[in-house]
Length: 249
Image (tube, rainbow, N blue to C red):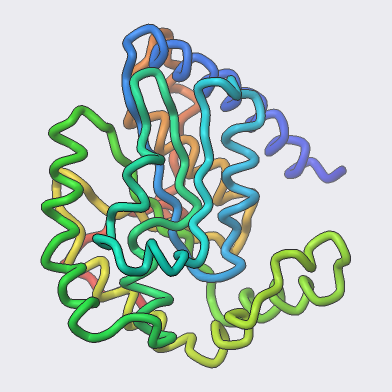
């Protein structure tokens, strides 16, 4: 193991301890925390969630992975199917994709109408404000990778028998529509970034650095007992809060 990898491993172990401290405080104070992970296909959402939750209590930690809606869900109010999965007091919930599917894959792949798309944007800020007013602490992260890295990762899925469950018809479209996803992403940031519910963008070309820095940013922005801020040094080249004054390629 290289010196860099050994250092990353030691750093991660320290962050796991901080995450346990965070959860202990969350449970004691009966807080509700929601972490939303969005991003390009193969950007590392699954691995990020496994890393964050590895040493957390399974009783108070839940993961909701968004799938294709059922026929019944497709006819309901769009946000309805997400509500049962929101955190209750003492719970830390992680969403592997979220209602922002409508702003990304549904728009790009034509899975929703233009009217449904615009209605989503009319409703989403009000919906998120309801959650915030109900005491849910919400974090919105977007994992981003460049086209070359995405091509490499999607190709590895086809060759690795342990990753083939991840394959889907949307994979090839992810490369074909890379620029369309970029445009949709930028519009999503522009229309749904607010001071109360900001977007945090993570450069995930290096998945290990992405995991370390996302966890650090998250821990810096939650309150818990005996926080060790000395190890929460976030790399600004990896994690950045979206700012409407600059353009993201």
